[in-house]
Amino acid sequence: MAVKMASDGLWQGENPLDFALPLLAVQIAVVLVITQGLAFALKPLRQPRVIAEILGGILLGPSALGRLGPFRRTIFPEWSTPALDTVSGLGLLLFLFLVGLELDFRAVRRVGPRSVAIAAAGIVPPLLAAAGIVPLLDLAIPAPRQASYLSLCVFLGAALSVTALPVLACILKELGLLGVPFGETAMAAAAVNDVFAWTLLALALAVSGGGREPKGPPLAPVYILSSGAVFMAFTFFALRPLMARLARRTGPCSSDSNLTCSCAVACALLAGAVTDAIGVHPVFGAFVFGLAMPREEGFAERIGEKVAPLVSGLMLPLYFATSGLHTNVDNVQGVAAWGMVALVVAVAVVGKFAGTFAVAVAGTGMARREAAALGVAMSAKGLVELIVLNIGKEKKVLDDTTFAIFVIMALTTTVIATPLMTALYRHQSTATTPEVDGMELKGGDACPA
Image 1 (cartoon, rainbow, N blue to C red):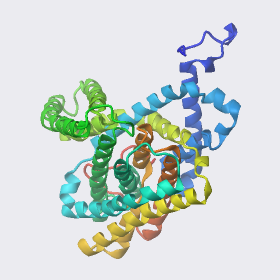
Image 2 (cartoon, rainbow, N blue to C red):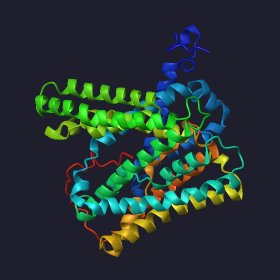
Image 3 (spheres, one colour):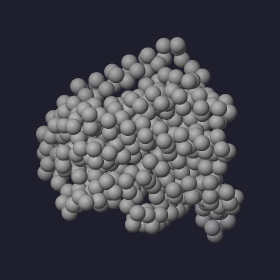
Image 4 (cartoon, one colour):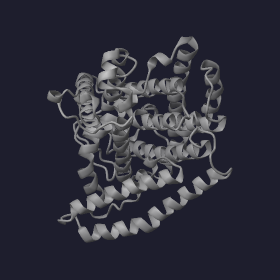
């Protein structure tokens, strides 16, 4: 059924909420009011804003207010879902572009092999544990599975091993650790971890064919991975030099900065369209293009400053709220399912903590207290985990119950990260937070995710 953009008004007998644009405006307003109210309520607990955004979505979704038929049919009718998902998906794509812009691997080079060793130690145990979790999921959730065993193992491995870089940056900044060697090591390890997790996720999607029956030739996964490699090479070795030349020409005080920003955003959107055509999710294209943007003359920073307010203030909260809207906690029923929740949380926390702690102490000589804090910090999932989970659900790799289990895990690991880190560093001075090249958390004192 075709839906008109706008109504002719109440005076002519039409309900504006039966039309796409006024309904979308009301939905966005409701989401922002609920999530910002929860963020204000959770502020004394020093929780990342993404917690409020996810909880707001769950509150509006089928787990709470969505149970009320009149509310669901009036504010979030089923026919409005595609428009809401499209707008929030666009926000996600632009956010991943910003993440790529702010990831500067000069910090990784400064820290050296330590960051790679710590990242690997936090990735390998959860990745191996995923192979054992999949059969247990089949026992706890007897519903038929669309994805293959291999693709689900790789996908859940990525979900369990990922670290939320923005959440980590926010915690370190609040504790005054962002500019000290510990903070540099943590941020560099998290950067390596996230790049590996995105690569793993791309591999999982290529192998799984999106959780559906293969439509193309048997070698389609090879073609997808090869095309993705060509795209990355073209972006870094052809587009990056052109963008660097543009950065030198415009300079930090150029009057063409708005035009430059518009071109960069357009290229990020086109990069997303290209990776979607390849067979990988559009966010990969935007992320890779953000990584390839030159850092000379403050070029990447200027673009980020222009794009970030709209994305973090409006579009990203909408994305995480829609994640909550798609989460039905009632799907997790019975002792077996809740036992899987406990197991997944334990694997996500203990696997990351144990591997990170062991390598940090034995391999780098870090003090035990700092190594424990690093293990806790690397266990935070936050927004990156939610992005991984939503891609999995969208591509039919995760069913509704598995999605709900991992959303609960993401919330739990993110909620406990801040108080545990605060307890470990309760005697540390937080009066001054030095800036770190390429790793400064932008956007004021509000944790963006």
